[in-house]
Length: 93
Image (cartoon, rainbow, N blue to C red; front, side):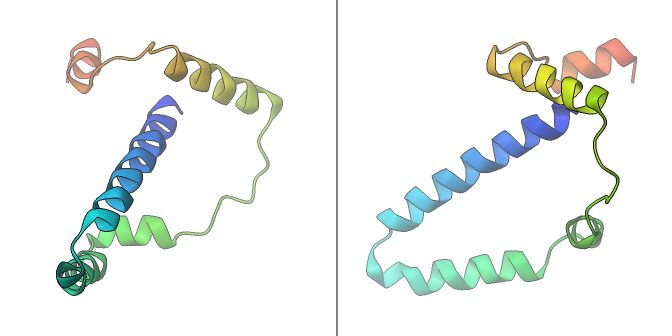
């Protein structure tokens, strides 16, 4: 769950940076930026597309799930994370 929350936080920061970049673009570059973003959106990886289009899991979260999510959020906010390399080393992958 921490990886999902971490990815969501990273995606949110990326989107915020993109919004700032778009706001800073000269008017003459807006059409080119729009076309490029449309290209990226239309040419997504099929797996990513399938995952994005998948319906949300209708199963409600248990109390244990909610507690685990909350612990993960607190750990992320506290900076209690490991890099991908450290994670792979721990799992010996």
